[in-house]
Length: 186
Image (tube, rainbow, N blue to C red; front, side, top):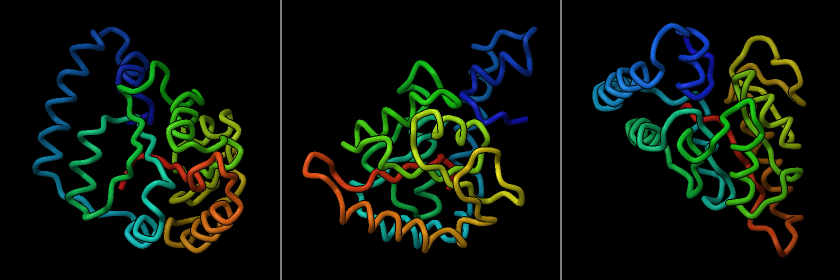
């Protein structure tokens, strides 16, 4: 069961009678093995989208850990941005706005100029609480609160790139790029 929160928070909810640190150690072992031997495929449209975005204009915000994200992205051939905010980088994970606010800060972008691409309710809530525009993808039904919904990432790619181009064209001198941030699955 995945609640799309940081693992310790998930264990506290689904296995309250177990030591979350022991559960986390077992999960780390399984996930690290999966990064080495698992079969991965990127979401349709991910390579086109990430290849078209300027590297300094987007961040990855994940409830997982950076080394796993890097491993999985490498196995799918996807680029990894300069800014990765993972579970270890913050005290509060999604649905707290803290991860997305940290990503915006590291990008040099104002939260209101950022676009969050999410497929999980906790990420949608985090982006909304951060004061960002939030578009939902890869879900048959829109997550409550999203500003726009797309059934697939592929369907959203042209609009995401248009948002990024528009933000880049109107970027204030104090900002670096458009601040496109999204969830952590390839």
